[in-house]
Length: 152
Image (cartoon, rainbow, N blue to C red; front, side, top):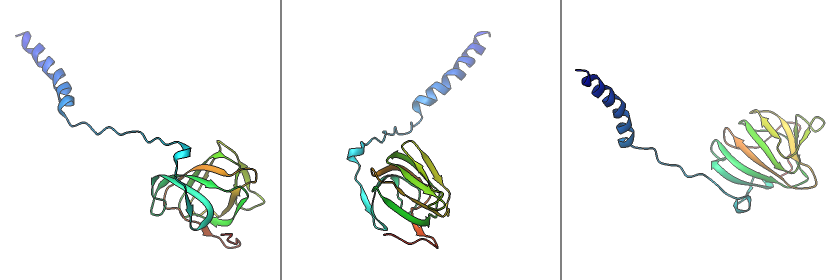
């Protein structure tokens, strides 16, 4: 009778092991890897001269990630976006603020998270183009605000 509990305990330990081997395994996901040189940039129709390369999602319809390239000496007048946007600066000096007087400069490695509907100015300082990683919680839009003139 002492052997029966040992057999039962062994069976309890082995069932989960066999269940893992026979249960369908989730598909392995390949990593997404692309060099900067291989990114295909597209110009934004609403912001001439600016380029983007989509990494995931679709900035025209919903959440997305992309690499953005903005020419040096670009000034975006007062505007806002419908969704929260996160920018991580890779190169160049990006500026942003509630107005031109309060705008701050952000160099490589800086993170700028802009809440939805925040009215601000932004742009790329002279010297070199700005490249940054951008993550949007919703579709990308550029809505000029009162008091700002569009420089499209």
